[in-house]
Image 1 (cartoon, one colour):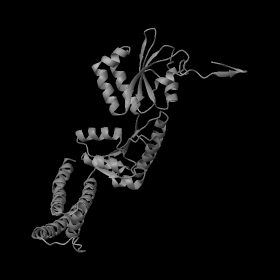
Image 2 (cartoon, one colour; image 1 turned 90 degrees about the vertical axis):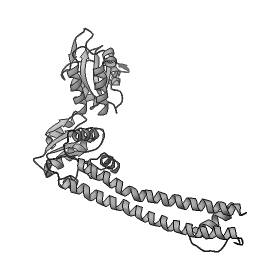
Image 3 (cartoon, helix red, strand yellow; image 1 turned 135 degrees about the vertical axis):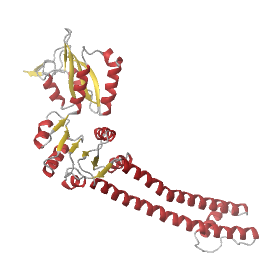
Image 4 (cartoon, helix red, strand yellow; image 1 turned 60 degrees about the vertical axis):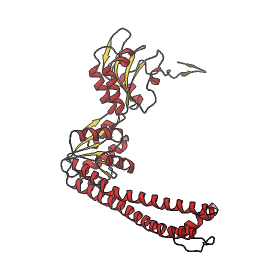
Length: 366
């Protein structure tokens, strides 16, 4: 991986020369054009006539003189414009050809080098998806010097990964060809971390059919997806919300309070780490007539469709339940610490939402 980064750096140095040449040619032609036009204006020509004359001369069109060149100054100016302008245009044309050729050559060599590096891999990790989770995973693997390949359908994401020095290919991981391009046959592990549960299930199915021995770690968002991913062939299912909840549960030994959440250095560090993977902390209170009050923790989490995970419940009596089981009931006035997906609407709304009224005859009760 380090060798690949060094090669890219060397390539940047080599191909920077055509860029500098092109910029120099543009500046040269621009200076000649400006000085020549200014000379004609000082000789008494209008600005439009001066620009027109210089353009015809520089591009060697030869339509004829705009005005008579009847003085020594105008002759010297015109000859100078012809020599320097035409030379500059030849120089600029060559620089353009050189630059575009270098860009295309770099692209071809870059792709070939990337493919060659991937072909030499064995026992590597394949990361499907370079979103928030994929970026963090790639950083950790890179720091651990573990070899990996990033697959993503988004060209910008692939370019971002390559700019960071990672091996990355633009490919559809749901297709066998895409996984084959990352040499899944020689890979030891595949991590599919897309924010789309359906795509993760499909990638898991495809990967398992292509390489039955590979270890698969799949990301899931909704609680109901875990069983589907396992059935599809995933060895491990990672629920980002649940992971964040379990880490916090290990830290919380006493009842959670607003002061602890705001003032604790360890909590601030945890909140920062959670934010890196798209999660947040939220403290809510179960209102008396809320729809979730009286229900179990498992029912509340299923109702949220993966929007949050209950970490701790603090009763009004002073009892604290860290990492409560699914059958624990939510009581009126409970203070509930949640790990929330920060991309979702506030989960606290579910704990304050009034219970729907039931129709009884011509009236409603609730």
